[in-house]
Length: 204
Image (cartoon, rainbow, N blue to C red; front, side):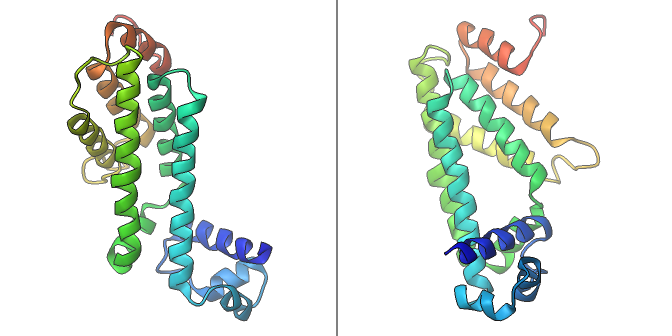
């Protein structure tokens, strides 16, 4: 089992760095310091590695979001921490990986789409409900509409057409759209907290 996890970890790291198309089973074996035969003893083919690697990645993301719910003091802190986490992921993961999975591995991409719908969207909706309960977000928000609006914001931040890398830094884009979103739904009490977490000056 230890060898299997080692192979999977190596493959996932290489996929995140170089994308999935250009990484071969030989590349993975060489990076692990083992034979290609050993890799095939644990994974029937590259597709199996891609499937399991992507599922592990999505599970790790969901675990972080769930942990964030119970380790933050309030909904605004939770959203800001999630924003910083997503920004970190964007810096450490080559966007080519997701592009190639969507283009060349449609069955694997279904799990990503499912994660967006059942993971991210559900998490945003829960955050909105939490914020309303805490008196930090305006009451009577239509959570289905507002959650989808936030999800579209996040997806747009990753869109190189909307925010080309040579003109915009990811962390600046994420901070700006997150501040805009939170301040748009926050109560006066929520605004004060948002100013602290996002380090927004009072006169702004």
